[in-house]
Image (cartoon, rainbow over all chains, first blue to last red; front, side, top):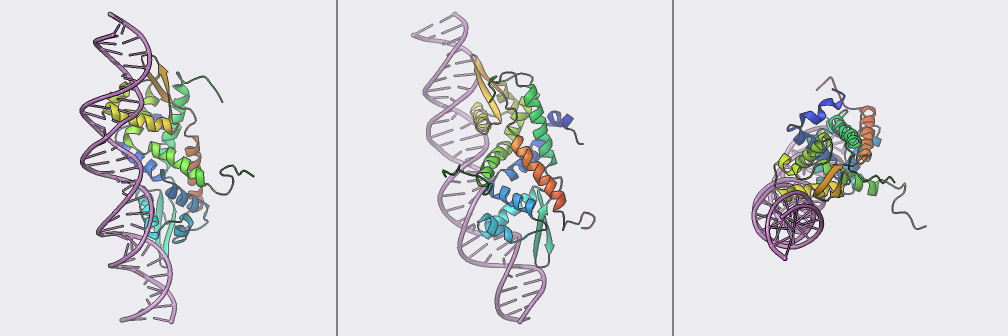
Length: 116
Length: 116
DNA sequence: ATCGCCTATCGTCGTTTCGCGATATGTAAC
DNA sequence: GTTACATATCGCGAAACGACGATAGGCGAT
């Protein structure tokens, strides 16, 4: 299901799942981690701790949240743990945004006609 | 140089802004409100309260958060207040997701899709 | 087996969020 | 003026979040 034709219609308790996904992105430290993973060619472990500048336990928590949300994947590689972005994990969120943006242009009935 | 708060150094402040945007979507009630606004042809006011099934004060708070994040806009129309989705507000978040998803395919080095 | 490295989990504390009822504000109508 | 309606704001308690230090576990090297 690529197109979000049904995105507006479903709105069941998928809200909950979507919210978890969005909430995973709703923190600067986690965004930083994702950005780091995005620009890292391979996989990284403890380097993340230094990059975000927080305590190791705190970073581990953020990693756990991201993993629980399905945004990242962790694979145990003998020396350390290899973290990488999970492909397609954000697709539902992308579809949501697309739907909302499309509807925004359509429902722009009472928005102030001032354009910047 | 007066240094314009942030330049190309890093996405220090950008992360914050992006996080606020994502956090605005990171709640079931707020998602419900946005879905409702997306589905509504015109603009709605107090109907939102009944739709989400929460107290009027609670809904007002969620609306305030969404408005603060720039996701929705409210225009005072004498009898009530007209709320509508703000066009293009989620564009930065969409760009983020696109970037992450693109990088996910690229950095998928240690993921073993077939094996487990 | 012991050491050192890396990661996960635990316990705690302060802050923030969430939900509510009650109350204040503003405007249209009377 | 008052009344009625719709929204915003104000406490307030309960829950969740974010951060930390300390601790426990797995694995390679010694």
